[in-house]
Each structure stands twice: as C-alpha cells, then as structure tokens.
Image (cartoon, rainbow, N blue to C red; front, side, top):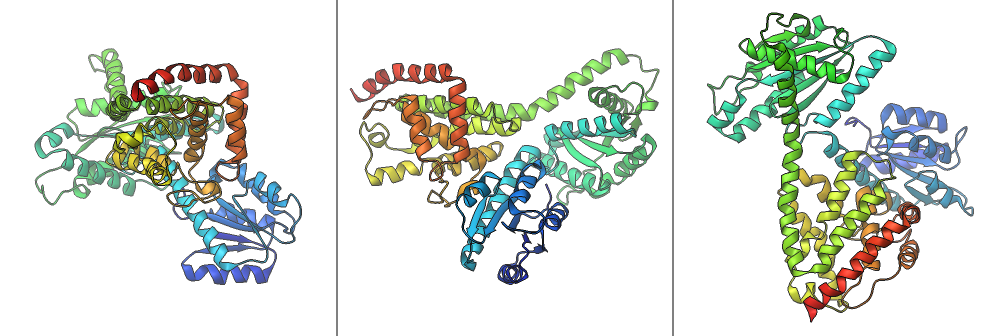
Length: 539
C-alpha cells in the first residue's frame, strides 16, 4: 500500500488535451503527473503509483490497450483505476479496451463534467479497494501489519537470503507485566499502551524494517540485511527509550518496559522460517526468565539453562495460543451473530435456506478465483450474514407469499444497510460490512445505495450479487417455483453488463458447468425442503 501515491496520471500524446485535463482537474485539489507516450507513461505509473490513470487509446510507441495489459499483469497495481479516452469510434474498440483491463471508457469529444464524475468514481473505487486490502493486512488496533502479513513478509525475506545471500534478523518484543496493566488499570488503558508501543516501534526502526503485531502484547520487527550486532543495537535503543515515549498522562506512575529476543537467519540452527521464529522466541523467553526489560541474542542464549528441551515446546505452544486469540475472537463473534440468524430462521425458513445456499455457492465460485485466503473468507462470511437485516422486517412482509409491491420492494432493498447497521459495532466484520453495503449496486451505476458502477463496486459485492441471484432464481418461493439451473444462468447472463459484472457471470457459468452435479444436488435439496417450510408458514 502506497500512501504517497499521486491522484491522477495523464498519458496522452496530444499536448492540448493534456493541458485541458490538467487545468480541469487541478482546481479540485487533485495531484497530477503527465506523460507524452506509452513507455514514458508506464515509467511514470511505476514511479508515482497513481490512483487513477487517464490514457489515450492511440499513443506513440505503446497503445492504451498495451498499457492496460501491462498494468493488469502486475498485482501491485490492482487498485489502479484506468480510464481510456478514444478518438474516432470504431466497432469493437470499447469491448477490446475493457477486456484488456480498462475500468472505464470515454469517447471524444470530452465533456469535462463527465470526466470529473468518472475520476471521482475511480478515486472512490481506489479507496474501497485500499480499505479491503488494508483490512486484510493490517491490525485494526495498532495499525501495524497483522500476523498473517508478518508471516508472508518474513517468508519472502528469508527466501531472498537463501537465493541471493545476506541475512535477515528477527526481533521479538513482549511488553512486561502487561496482564497486570490490564487488571489494574483496565483494558482501555492496555489498548492505549499497545497503540503507543506500536507508534514507538514504527518511529524507532529504519524505513526498510517492518513492524507487526504478532499477537496480544507481542510485537515482531523484521530487519532485512541486518546483522545480529546491528539489530541488537537497535533493540537496546528501543528498549531504553520505551518508558520515555510510552507514557499516559492520566497514569504518570505507570512505567512501561519490554523484553526483546533476537535471532538471525545466518545462525546455523536456522533452516526455515519456523526455526527463525522459534529461536527468536527462545531468546525472548530468556529475557523474561532473566528478569525482563532486557535484550537477548540467539548467539548468547544461556547454555546452562536447566530445561531448554522442555521450554522450547512450551514457548511454541504459548505462541500458537496467542496467535490464535485474534482468530478466535472473530469466530466467537460469528457464532454470536449466527444465533441471530437462527432467530430469523425460526420466523422465515426461506431466508435461512437462502443464506446457507448463497454461502455454499459463493465458496464454490471463489475456489477457482485465486484470491487471497482472507478475501475468500470475508466474502463467505458476508454471504452468510447478508440477509441478517431481515430480522427487522414485519412478519406480514417477511412471510408474504406473493410478489411485493413497489413500497415493499423498497423496504427489502434496504435489508443490506440494516445488516450493516447491526454489524457496525463489530470491528472484526469491517470487510464483510463493506461487501454487504454495496450488494445492491449495479454494474451500470443505477444501483443502491451509492450508485457505484462497474469495478468501482467492491469485488466481493459484485461476486456475492451473482450467487445471491442464482439462488433466488432456482429456489422455490411461496408465490412461484424455482427455475432450472440453465434458466438461472441465462437470466444472469442477460443482465451481464447492466446489473452484473460480465466477467463474474462467465465465471459462474464455467464453475457450474465444471461441477454441475453438486450444484444440481444443492438446488434439489433446497427444493425438497422449501415446500414444507412454506406450507408450515402460510398454511
């Protein structure tokens, strides 16, 4: 994530058009970079990391289509919103441009107000994508890298040392007597200490070092290309200045100290990332065992320690337990919310089946997408939770057997927002809430609540909208029977490019065709159960 990215990069060989765009955009506070041809444009994009790229379709040396393909081949630029400007209209230009990876397409002559509106959409898309990415990678309390991100980055650094030489040193930091702080002053004070400690570590390390919240009151610092001696010097500075920088005015007598453990990839005992973590953990444990508030290096572990063989498994057990706490917290919240969904099930059997089906269909669809595990999990959670807002609907509407009138349809359209309202206090569901909020947006921009269009709609919302539609079409309802799988796929394809993301429509059909039997079995299962449920509710 690049917080210093400029807003817009304009790539166009027409100097008058570049000047027009710059003079139109700058008064709105946007930072602008310019390039006159394709090669210069790519170089500028990689250097400046703009949030939005506006480029001409016909460019010297490298076309707008080629620029799109270059950008979409680089995962680090996934959040960059690309607007292509075309001159003379030719059949198939727009389709080819969008297939190449452009997010938007504008035909000359330009209308500045339209360009500004599309740029605003692009910036909004970038913010939403960055928020999703951030939620998956960053610890919500301390604003540091979370445990999963830490493991990925440490693995990358470790493999780099194995391929190219050099070394990486890992620093583990654990606040001393933190439980006593929570027990004496309360968890809000404890949270403040964690946040101040995180800030102290970030400010105290080098720009190339990476600080993560490892779990609970434990932090980790990855120090690339750093010897054990240099890392030990850094750890001593951080330890000595910690009580100075981590102070709470309301508790002036509270002194904060921490213990440090260091291990280097150059140590002969380190053959894997797990070895590096375990050795750093042992060093940290020795700091604790020796009286806390000190730094221990892996090459100076106490050889006379009477029980090293017993301690290493215990340290690993405790480490795994601490890491699991954050995952358990979310799981416990999920279980609590599921109790609300079961309360809804007692009122409306269709909604319960719908949530189960959509969750299952969503999991199947993302199996082949190659998305990060965190995003897959968030989308599956959102599928399970998306209808929770129906708990606020009156029974005469929730259980109504026939089609709704326009006023009732408007109430039903609000269900995702009601769900978000219910989930809002649970910060662990921030990503899921974003997905659910935009579930009723449309690809053509005519949706609800924010009128987002095309890829400015969060990717999870676009996918969930399709699996939800598939189940709605194939499931039996009180006022109609479910349609066949092929009828559902045809109906969804008919709405591709207007209501739904065209690419995801194709992905759904391909996924169903690859595993037709299991999709058909689930549709049949729901149909067998639904008539009994509907009859019991409306009999």
